[in-house]
Image 1: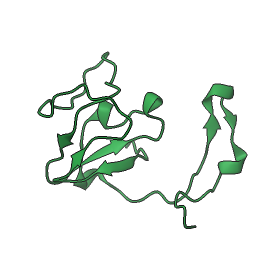
Image 2: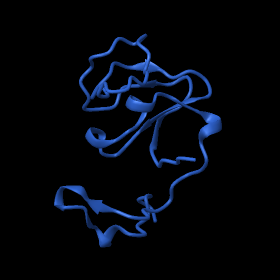
Image 3: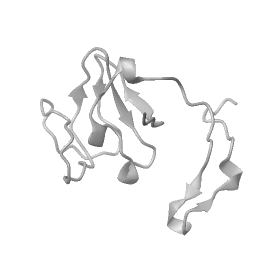
Image 4: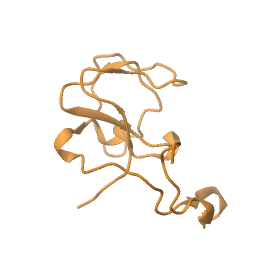
Amino acid sequence: MRRWARRASAAAASRSAPSGWKSRWRARQRIQVLPGVPAPRSFDPLRIPPGQYLMLGDNRNDSADSRVIGLVPREKLVGRAERILVSAAYQENWMPRLDRFGMSLREDR
């Protein structure tokens, strides 16, 4: 079973348009996985259907998130991430970022 940690960016019945993204998709266009086709870097606002979640990675240019896997059904959500387990600087030969290990993901903790 594969599990990913991603930020839930939009829930059911909400509209999503991540700030700073250029609009390129029509609102009715579906998000779908097409093998060998790169994920779009931006999209227009879209309505999230009930029971579905839009998941976005923190590093949008290198994240396999809802732009790749599509919307995520509620029953697939397992829990909430609280801390950083492992962090690596991929631009620096994947050197571990030891100062981030165990760091809280919440600003108030």
